[in-house]
Length: 49
Image (cartoon, rainbow, N blue to C red; front, top):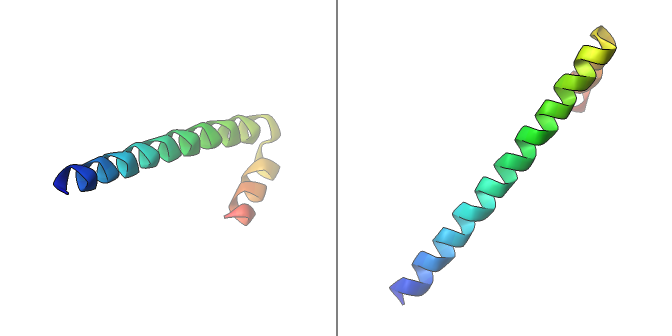
């Protein structure tokens, strides 16, 4: 029984890591937009959150 729980926990941790990586990529894209569009890009990003 413990093995199954551990495997499940391991799977959750792996999924969380993948989500974090996706979020980091999105943030990098947003930063690039911010640089190219300046103030307008910052305002749009703030309104999305």
